[in-house]
Length: 159
Image (cartoon, rainbow, N blue to C red; front, side, top):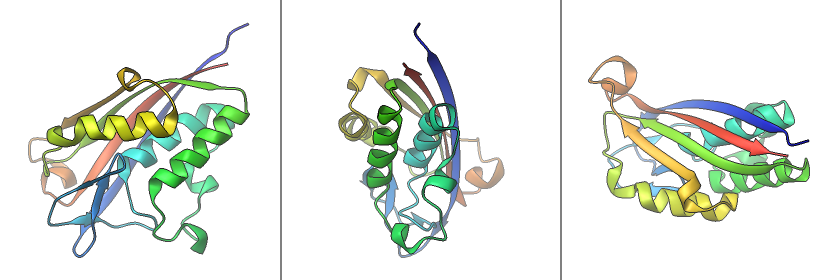
């Protein structure tokens, strides 16, 4: 019997000076980076939650706690690779990822294809099974005030 699991992930980080901005494993030129224990890649963090919540019954905070020095300033691509490995070891294949980056700035459209390439390589699924969209909040809320970035991801896994 085939089991299909669907997970959703959400993450948010505020902007800070003197830090590089990473989204979907890609360095984005911008005047601010994101504050966080790791590199604060909101898209990858949302994807990790989307794949581990329905398959491992956990979340990114339990797997990679921000209280651990082991994960201080870690590249989120490494965390995603570890999460994918755990999900696969449980017998699941990741079928697709659908995601949205919510930010007034920077504009992400020039970087979407590269993000999809990076994620496809790490997750091990075809690039056409990964979608990334960007949206603003029309200047409403913290993202509209350019205080940070949020991301939402949905993942489907098959066993």
